[in-house]
Image 1 (cartoon, helix red, strand yellow):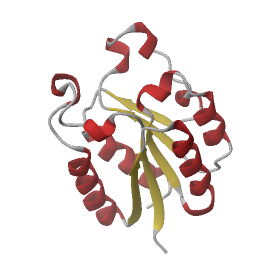
Image 2: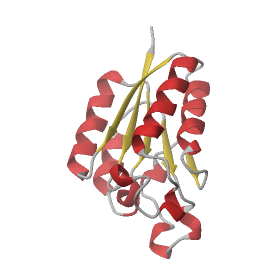
Image 3: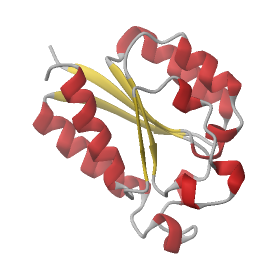
Length: 146
């Protein structure tokens, strides 16, 4: 049986490739999804890839993951630094969570140095560009014994 991974993306990631390419690169979120889907197939994982600018929608998707996902990769974007609601939802999820940030949040503004999500994540990948998503999928595959 294929294990399903949910890849959840927070606010403004729909603008990936357009917004601050000097920070986030030129790849679009669709490009990232294509790369993740190909790797998930190689690893024997299913993939559900989503993005929302709305905190409540992300919380709802984490709740859905409780019933159908073996693991979560999440780039909460700006919600990393402000959302106790996302942390609480992740705390109600029993599977492994890997947090991803395209940029190195520790080299940026001081308010970005703290992430609520990191308190729940088995691993945090930051500053590896969009390759961080692929690293996260490999790590989840390892955790899940794929």
